Length: 406
Image (cartoon, rainbow, N blue to C red; front, side, top):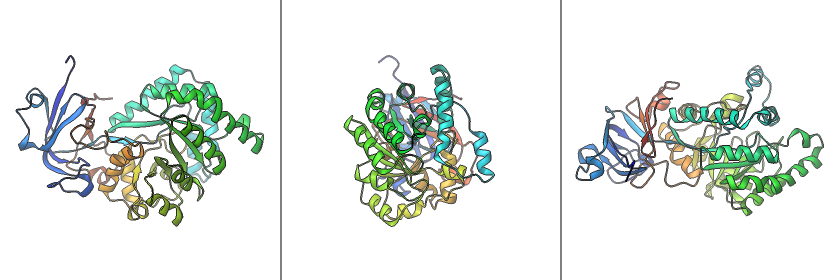
């Protein structure tokens, strides 16, 4: 077949598969020592000890071979929460916050104004830069939300532009109430929700896989969020929720009730919230970059994991509250400040992110999975937390294709 590629990465000191099996250690990480991975086209063909590479397989015999030099290999990171399509900058807001000003959701409106003023080509170029950042840091699957347009025409173009770079597009028209509606108070907010569940959803749904709502003070209450999420579900979109970021609220319970794939932030949780998550298949997606950038308390990942909740880590890359695209950074913060072990954090940024997107083809290295690999300039996954801020991604394969330098 024209263009068909095979590749073999061998002499891997520690291979994280996220596929536990007899003879593998690391619990859920399914670690194989002195390992190799064979890629046939876009998918993983074989995983195992390097001494057992099936050289009689034509894919192995013809493969381009990479010697990992005894270093570690992990699955590509899965970033299940980003806001990458926007214009403008909020560095001044960040500086003011570091000087003591409180973070509030309303700052989103300044990005909305800049984004509306930008051309498609300007947004597309900025988006391409962020995608390159993600790839360079080992992220091979990522979700992108709308939410910085907040008009029918602008939300549609953000969804359309996002769909050019990922299949995981989320319609977030319910991000905040835009200024032209907010000045009318509750009546304006309800009128905006009417627009979101009507003409805006109709325009965006063809480009999106998910619907989301920011169920939080300063954004949308539980009734408004429910209207948006139920309308999105009726249009065939999966459900995601921003919830419990600025205080305890209805976001987690609403997400569980509606069968959301993920509820994101989970900074402030009551016992009932944790119990509801533990009894559901809704993933708690934690976003440590937000707490780092806003000086809010970090989510208690230990509490969630010990209760049996599935936890994911994501970057929430956005210009206001978490302007980082680095999941290695998020892993280091989660280990240092959120009670996670290095193994739990790496799993949450790979297999956990895949669970938050309800994907089984990414986040793990097993035969038939997409061949997304990250070669570390380090002997093990632990170094992602042990050496914070150091660029440890030495090589990336996405769908079996080696990605070049940024």
